[in-house]
Amino acid sequence: MNDEYQSPLLEAAVTELSRLPGIGRKTALRLALHLLRRDTAESDALGQAIIKMRHEIRYCSVCHNISESEVCGICGSDTRDRSTVCVVESVRDVMSIEATGQYKGLYHVLGGLISPIDGVSPDMLSIGSLVERVGAGGIKEVILALSATMEGDTTCFYLYRKLSPFSDLKVTQLARGMAVGNDLEYTDEITLGRSLMQRTLFSDTLR
Amino acid sequence: MNDEYQSPLLEAAVTELSRLPGIGRKTALRLALHLLRRDTAESDALGQAIIKMRHEIRYCSVCHNISESEVCGICGSDTRDRSTVCVVESVRDVMSIEATGQYKGLYHVLGGLISPIDGVSPDMLSIGSLVERVGAGGIKEVILALSATMEGDTTCFYLYRKLSPFSDLKVTQLARGMAVGNDLEYTDEITLGRSLMQRTLFSDTLR
Image (tube, rainbow over all chains, first blue to last red; front, side):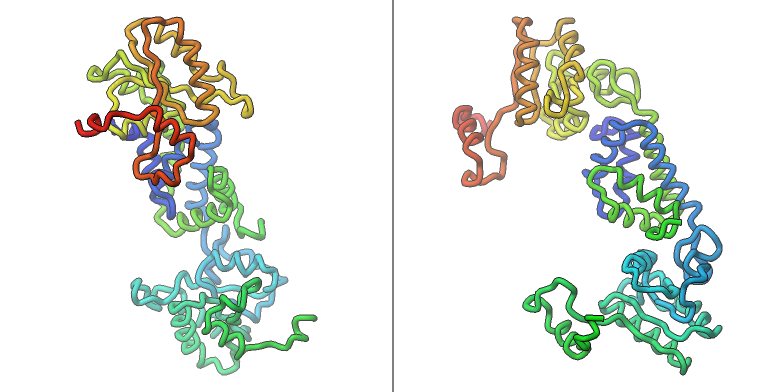
């Protein structure tokens, strides 16, 4: 018997919960004790939802977004603009962009960013399948919607080089600038410089 | 299909995870996507540990601490001082006191504190079984180790009154005072007043 937790069963649950990101052993214990106080049905539902999700969710064979069938709902939709592909790092980013309601094209999920420090090389990302998709024709614009970090920039440059042989293809990236709601005073000089260079017509914001 | 999560399976897992205390839907999504990136074995282990723990953990019939048998390891131990019972609010508190390594007696877990605002009345707590334990004889001291809050104080007074018929019983409570490591400057005046009233011999700290 473990002295600290009084119970190997509790200890096992705490250990598994504390493997989750941002959850330490103290938080894990709080969660486990919470579940012990609740109905059996609640912990059954939680446990089964986790197991079922991991076993049954698949990835779209076209864009690598999560899906419950061979092709995801976005790739399979006939109301989306099939000539535009937005390249993102992760499934999370697809959700963020979908939440804006501003985008009606397709996606391509890379599954990460090139990062020599973390040992992520281009061949570990789904870059080959992006080039194939573009090569198959019909795509007019690829939007590089990656983080404004060193890894994001490195990946953008790499993708840009890989896509440059397609002479008719427009490769764009997300605008850099002041975040909405931010004080100019607290905006860093690189962002401010980019905001100046890429300034837009004020009349465009009124449309 | 839910637009936000792209998948009812993912949505179900997010919903269940976000029922946990302190975990909102954003954190729940982060946890679910983390699990999707990891091995199937990991989410199986997590899900099963939660289900198994909730189904198999029982409560000690003597002290109401968690247990995997009729009587918990502490109540069943022959090295603990059976004449002292420490009354605590929850299983968590048993762990905290065990972690100090300063206590060798038995416990009694109330399962809450008296709180008219939250609708917790004395009969919803395991107070009757505490009085029975004391009535059965052999217990010389009951330590009230409850929070220094209004609910804790109310419960202490109630227990003190319930235990007062046992004339030979010593009823004690945890010392109130400055927390170790705290600045005197930032200690509130009530705590400071109690620390003064209940001052201890400095020579005692040297033993």
